[in-house]
Length: 75
Image (cartoon, rainbow, N blue to C red; front, side, top):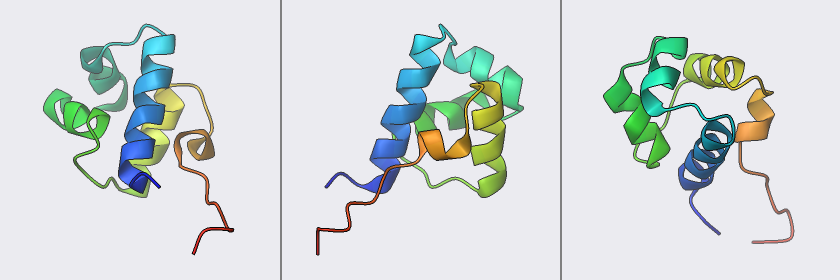
C-alpha cells in the first residue's frame, strides 16, 4: 500500500488539476505558503487538521475526499 501522505498528495493534486487550480492559486485560497503547497503536492509533509480543512474548503470537497481509504483486509 502507498504511504498515506502519498495517497493524500495524489488526491489533492488530482482535484486541484481537475479544477484548473495552480499551486500558487491554492496557496492564495488557503493562506498556506506556495512552497509548502508544493511539498504537500509531492507528499513530503504531514499536515495538520486545520490545513486539511482549508485545502478541502478551497477545493470545494469534504476533507474525507482527500484522505486515503483503509483496507481492513490487509494486515
